[in-house]
Amino acid sequence: MTRTTLHSTDRKKIGLALFVAALLMGIALPVHAVTEITLWHDWGGQGGEVIARIVETFEAQNPDIIVHVDIVPDMNDKLLVALMGGVAPDVVLLDRWLTSSFAAQGALVALDPYIARDGVNPDDYFPATWEEATYRGTSYGIPFNTDTRALLYHASMFAEAGLDPDRPPSTWDDLWEITPRLTRRTASGELLQVGYVPHHGHGGFVHYLWQNGGSVLNEDHTEVTFHGVEGEEALQFMFDFVEWYGGMAALDAFNQTIVAQGPLPALLAGRQAIIYEGNWHLGSFRENFPEFYANDLRVALPPMNKNRATLSGGFALALPSSTRGEQLEAAWRLIRYLTSEEPQLTLGVEMGVIPANRHAAVHPDFMDDEIKRVFIESVQYARFRTNHPAYPRIEGVLQGPMQSAVLNREMSIRAALEDAARQTQLMLDEVNEVLASF
Image 1 (spheres, rainbow, N blue to C red):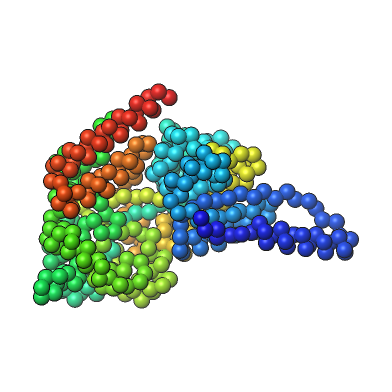
Image 2: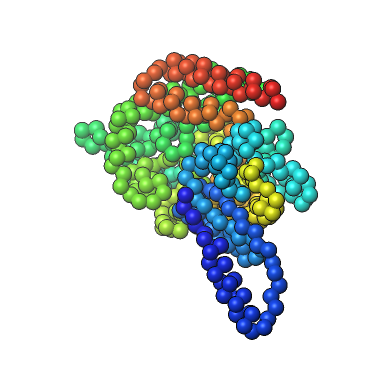
């Protein structure tokens, strides 16, 4: 774990010095109890720096609370271990789609009593973000941010290929049409530059399944449904692109040649023309590569076949079930502050992530350029992962072993779909059986 703030020791030293000085001067000091709490998150780099600054502002406004902020890699795994060992944090920034899984295991505090007591208004947040942080109708988290995916593309590479940078691809067919014009190879066939690669970035089988009119589960979450014709066509779309490039070995060899530093290095270096990615890279681009952001980076709505669709994710702030007493009240105050409009606007402006607080998300200081506005527009096409405790494991199979087996020619598309359907239906049945007993 990386501790980004060590306020407690420093403040105690300063407080002791002031206390001694006051005694020597005969000044009576009021006694204020200080509550110390710990926040866990796994945002590194710029995200961690922004969170640290926002927390420092909270501490300045709440001198009776000291917040220790720990950056915890593999936090989702470590949180349950910490709970079992009695060393869990007081607040956790949780990947929101995992809320139902943790809540089903009794790992989180139900927040409805505090929401009602303090008049927290769900309408202040994007509706889907609020819903995703619930389990069986009870809130277990307050949305911190949201995100979405879109097509990021390199305007200069489009122009060099004779394509109009102001006419980006919109459909699967468009991506197929322009990719050959954006691809470059050596005389012996090795890839020097690529157009669109469906599995690069944050695209994946589930995205293309949605774009093709399919779904992962049925409406009552009792059956997996991804293995029909919609899923077969989605995997075929991905597989055909990989084969056109020469297979995974050719693409892996190409990836090894990318040496640029920064977010999305292949795009930044002019080696990949289009990538399906999220808005969380925008803050780094604006801060560290302002010329690229201003002149070459463009964004288009997520692609479509039968539907235009993409994934929206994000994080929520939650209280582990071990949080009690003064720590719970202090932790709840921290959550309320971090999800209020001003800190949310700071998060959006400095990082480019979309605030979950809707007032911050539509603030002119955040929506100050076309790139951000396209991402905000793409939210209307976004879908959230199914709010079911089994879903994280199911998606892990689909965008992990199943997708890999097809793209690496280890299994046929039909065999991979049927095998994944068997595995994930067992997972779903197992969880539903447990849920039925409660």
